Length: 192
Image (cartoon, rainbow, N blue to C red; front, side, top):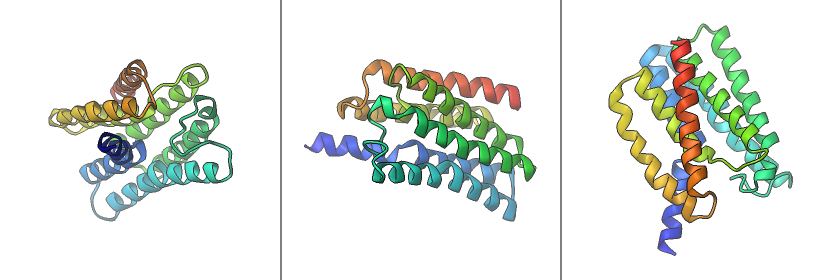
C-alpha cells in the first residue's frame, strides 16, 4: 500500500499540466521582465495548466471519459485534440502579444507533442505523463541552460509510478519520453 501511495503521489505531482506551469514560469521570467513576464506566465498558467486540468475533470463529471488520467486509450483522442485547441489559442495570444521566441517555441512543442500523442492514441497507448517531463526538460536544456539536464532524472520515478500503477508498460513509458524529446528538439531547433 505504501508503494501505491508513493506511485500515486509521483503521478500527481509530476503530471504534465503542473510541469507546464513551472516551465512557463521559468521561461517567462527568463525572457521578459515586469508586467510582461507576469502576463506571459499567466497565459501559460491558464491555457497550458488550468484549462486542460479543468477539461479532464469536466469530461469525467459529464461521463465522457472514465477518469481525468485518460486511462482508457479509446477515450484519449478527442480530449487531447481539445487540449491542443487550448494550446493553439495560447500560441495565437503569444504571437499577437509579440512574446519572446522561446515562449512561442515551447507552446509549439506542447501543441506538436500532444497532437502526435493524440494520433498515436488511436492505435496504441503512449505515456503523455512521461512526455510531459521529457519535452519540457529538453526545452529548458536547449533554451535556458544544459544544467537543467539533471531534471531528466524525474523520468525514473515517474516511469516507475506509471508502470507500478498499471497505467503503462515500459515500452509506452520509453516511447512517450523519446517522442517528446525528439519533437521538442526539432521544434526548438527550427524556431530558435
